[in-house]
Image (tube, rainbow, N blue to C red; front, side, top):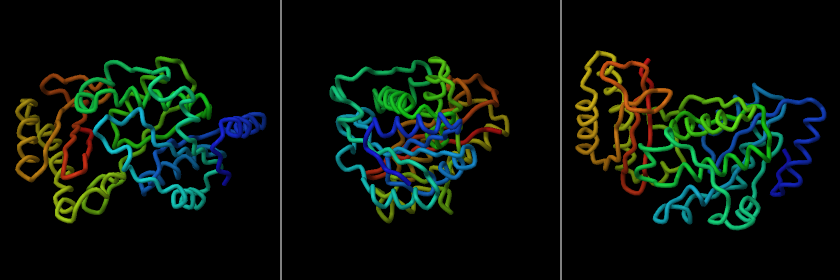
Length: 281
């Protein structure tokens, strides 16, 4: 596997593969790789003869009081994991490479509707940061297909809308959430959990499963169900940001009885902010 920090080297390699008519799959990450990331790589490997991964901790998607400085950076360990999974090229740029004029002075990409509400209410500007960096990475890598985890459901919706609105010929694939044995969705931020918090954390997934079962049982007062789920989390020791039932495609609020939906939640537990979701199927 080749590793580069250079836009010029990345473009040269991609251009060479293009001349040979090879399909390119892309897995963008912020590093500190876990089994969820590696599942993205495995699926990418099955979709294209060339796989590019990126590792970049994007300052634009962190708020002023968030964990940018402390976010775990484990580049060498990540490199070894990507080598083992057959990645062809790792792009690991510096902030100055991604934002030559500085992150705060760079052109921004905003995605309305799906990028508003839910996590955006608690992390204002987060999805503008996500869309901006992913747009730049797409322009550099020019992939045929790009893969993202469904754990970040709203992020995936934002990227799909951006690609559709801008007319880019990129196939965006969502990959099912990879979970620990007790149901906790894998996340780099799980390492912020203390021992007792780690014991409590799977209750987020259990609460979503309960909520899905209530929706499928045609309990149609969705607002009451959301309030009950929030209360369950608070009683267990979480500080919930939201629990909501939304339309699975548009992420807009749903009418009572609508079944094409997804239940989404975000809750703080100690130093960790956990997110999760489940489709109603």
